Image (cartoon, rainbow, N blue to C red; front, side, top):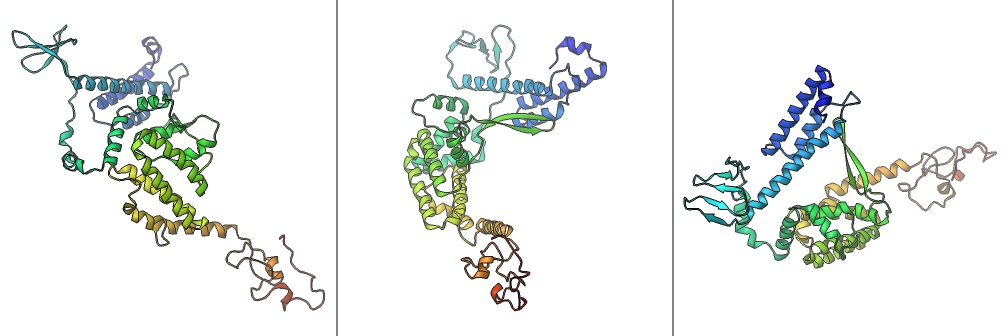
Length: 395
């Protein structure tokens, strides 16, 4: 944002626009501090409110956006510290008049229940704390929480602890000497309880580059983030086995109790690869993604709860399934797109190993294009000079 001297030198019309934009952005900040909008929505509103700079001496829109995002970050840190202070039990001393003074803090709680600053004697306004006990699902959690299996409860508790500060948890994990090699972006997903992208894991194993910079456009602005570049993707059973071994090692490092679960699930997928023909392995990869996504979205499931994935087996593996059918149509479309309209010379010589449906070329006479006979038996060819006028093609 421009300083006061620069603002004073600007034309009146520019100053009015700057003030208007500033008021809009500050209003968005206040809405976020009041809890009326999410952080992502606030950033989106900033992007719409800040115009593209026309004056080269003015601050860039991106830097202006960054300044307001910093205000949101400062409020997040302030709120986190405030919540932490409330969680610690305060030791108070009783004064003769009944007022309670908090040791180590410059706050005084009066008989009226309000807190005041001890130095300026002004009331301290706190943001109302959300009451999680009023959430409709809190009652069922209290009643059914004990019904969770030990493995599910342990996973839920670890995730709840990690997400309090994912950056700190990931930084602490990476500084551990025993941490396995794993893409930075996927560590964040794993600690947050999200499904791991095996394409990123597989690609990262063969990449020598650091996480690539990815840009996202919001209106007239571009926000850059760093993500792992997927130069390779999991396409075969061997690819999946390599990626899964690495993902399982990372999973059991962050969630040690899931070691047996990861091993049994790996054997389940490998058994499917062995049972299906190689041209159908793409269906198994889609099934795997769907299973891991479902388990990540539900805290009461394990990867080994195969009975819970019956619908996914039908959807992705059965010929009657919705996704298996679309995959088959896609493969058929690819094959038909590669077919040539030229006659098959090997078929005309009687040596083509493919059927008419699978052959790249057409099984028709190379002279008259009839599917009823080969070139050597064509009744339409001249009786003399049998090879004259025969259509040539590249085998």
